Length: 243
Figure (cartoon, rainbow, N blue to C red):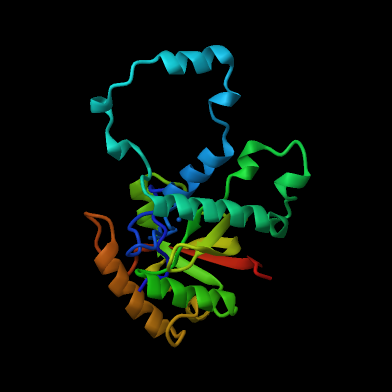
């Protein structure tokens, strides 16, 4: 089965992992939840607005009946907790990405205080933990996803140099990784080297093909069907923390 649960277009949680809240294919406790909530934490409130704008906000009429709960990325204590944990984790591990801690420097760009995408591997909390363990012990150094998922979601493909925070099955941040290379290959051109780098099962090409074909047949976007030549995004990465 595919090892990644980041899903383009959600930036970056698609289906929650039975309470873990993660992201499928190429970004986890849901990237959307984590990214948006973290951005909210790092942005100022009305106190950062000019007085006249803050006053205008207070004067606006508010109609509760006009509010659509679906307009909000999250609305639960669990999502708040995940976002807060990711923000704290990012502050701790920034130096491992070559950035100073925000508390000891001045002139830090606001964009640098927002954590990178946070997501989990796998289809469920147990698999998220199992695959994370493979990353942490150095066995797993690559991941793959369907390129169609990015296309269908209107999201850009991952790029070398991008950072990600890996979550465990409970949605807690555990590792900081950086993509070292990204390539797109037909499914049937994935080779033994890639299968070994992904490190799942017995790490053979036969196992990789069987597991990933099964996954793609279950989770491809509506209107898509598995094909031997379907484009696969292969992402290799390095672990920056823990080092």
